[in-house]
Each structure stands twice: as structure tokens, then as C-alpha cells.
Length: 150
Image 1 (spheres, rainbow, N blue to C red):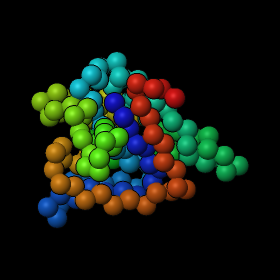
Image 2: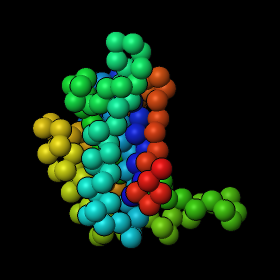
Image 3: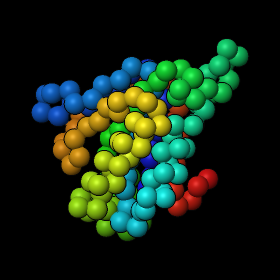
Image 4: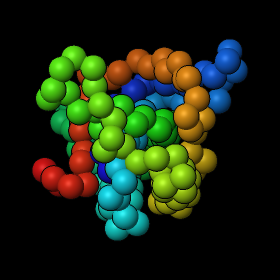
């Protein structure tokens, strides 16, 4: 699994003119699922997202986690995070999991993040053409990959 975590002051997802998810301060999380991902990857990534200390404290140091700032999460599925770009100019997406595999993991991620935060997780619609609006705070953008765990 791969996640792009963006610290935002606001973010929303719109599908066909209807807002499907919206948050104020918190994380916009773009989530890519690979065919080899497991529940262990999901658990590790969910813990990492919730525990990430990238909100400023009183000394302007990134030292606060999501719970410390009463933040929320907008979770968006994004298979393009596994784009292969080595050959040619048209990306390939064979590493991205097919929907029959990815949707259950995406839904489990929603449940896991809700359990860890005690909050409703805002979302887009899996596989839909989504319009994402955000105000990145900082900007702070972190890429997390369960296979490299850097």
C-alpha cells in the first residue's frame, strides 16, 4: 500500500457535483492498493497515518498528531499511485490492485481509521471520477509505502 498524506486546513471530494466527503483541519490521504497488499500492510499503514506527528506545536515544531489537534481524515482511493513510468510516456497500472481485491481493503482501511481515531472517516467514491479540492497546510506532504517503510 502506498499513501500520500497531506496536512490540510480543508479538503473535499466531489462526484458528479455532489460533495461526498469534506473536512476542515486534518489529513487528505490518497491511498493506492497493490495486488500483493495484506491486512498487515493495512494495519501498519493505518497506525502510521494516525500517529504521524506533522502538526505544529506551540514552538512551531512538527510535534503533534491528528488526535492532538482534533483533526479529521478524508480518504481517497487512487490507483495511479502505482503508475509505472519507466518505459514510454503512457503510464502502466498493472501493479495497482483490481477493484475486486482493492475495494474490501479500502473499506477495511476506512473502518480501521475510524476505530483508531474515534471519528467518521470522510471518503470519495471508489473508482469514480472525483474532483478533490484542498488547501495544503505548509505545504506538508508525506509519502508512506508499506513495502519500503522508510
